[in-house]
Image 1 (tube, rainbow, N blue to C red):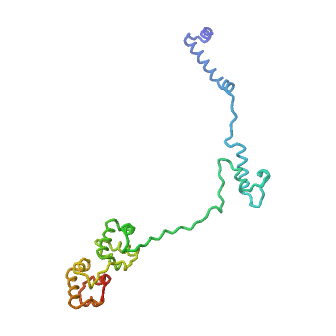
Image 2 (cartoon, rainbow, N blue to C red):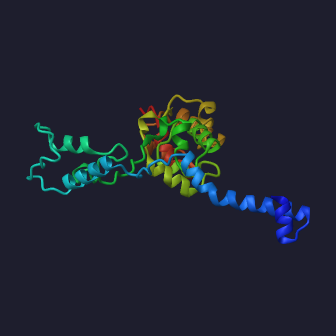
Image 3 (spheres, rainbow, N blue to C red):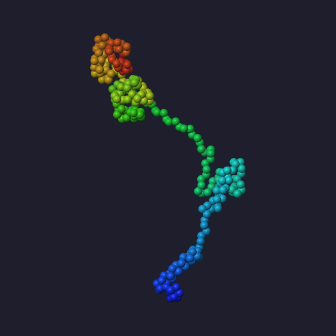
Length: 248
């Protein structure tokens, strides 16, 4: 056959071989699809959604949009007394979820933020003081130290006297706290010594000595007015009144 092709087309031996190979290749490409279909049986194309699922979805749509008073048709009902809600669940496709009823959504009122808890100033600890914006560990300890030196606060405005405590922060604390003046440790004005009196931040040495001398020379103090007339108490007397007791 090769010799005949050489003679017919006036080709050399190598050219004749190339022609035969090319011809064979063309035949293979043209006949390959037919052989593939014969050797590999074709599978029916499956629909992405089966007919059963499609029927279930259509039935669900009909039930969802039906009036509550209408009965479920015989094509959906299974011949028993199953409620409509159960029927809907039974026909739902596996990949779908039951839509929520309008009544299932409740409109909740916006919850108001909890009001800050107040606390008593003369018994407050550092944690309670630090709940006030602007008061950290340092200021909370400083407030308690000043409170202990005084024996307790007799008025809220004494917070302005805390060293380097900003007045804005002091006002914020005054609004949050209550004050129980009965917790204040008082000085027995008719028995206290100079050493005991001078320990109080509002009393200097000269004032303490004057209180003791007036008591020894002119007798016991009857009340706050009597003390204030006999002793010069200075600019702190506004608060000192709450720190004295033991009048006779």
